[in-house]
Image 1 (cartoon, one colour):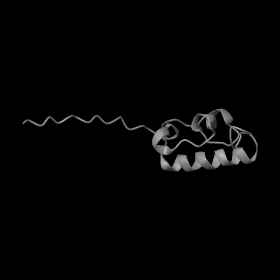
Image 2 (cartoon, one colour; image 1 turned 90 degrees about the vertical axis):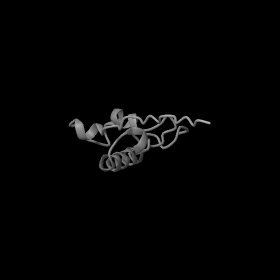
Image 3 (cartoon, helix red, strand yellow; image 1 turned 135 degrees about the horizontal axis):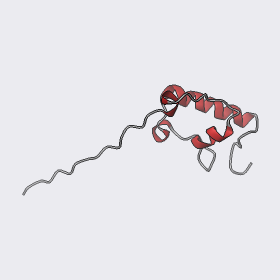
Image 4 (cartoon, helix red, strand yellow; image 1 turned 180 degrees about the vertical axis):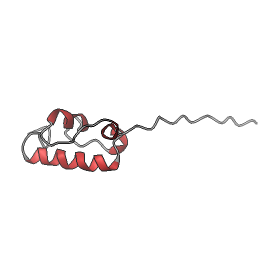
Length: 78
């Protein structure tokens, strides 16, 4: 019997948006930060958002700071 090998297609690697464009990550920019949180207000992981490790850390700290300053809610219930 002949074995058929299926080709696996890999998705194109995402490029960090902050490395390519001159965008500054700031906790006061709620519109920018809202792109990186889910509708349940959780931070989107790096593999899903396509952001590099350096900017993912900066994003996470900016989102956490915006939560403490009450610009973004911690959960959906708040």
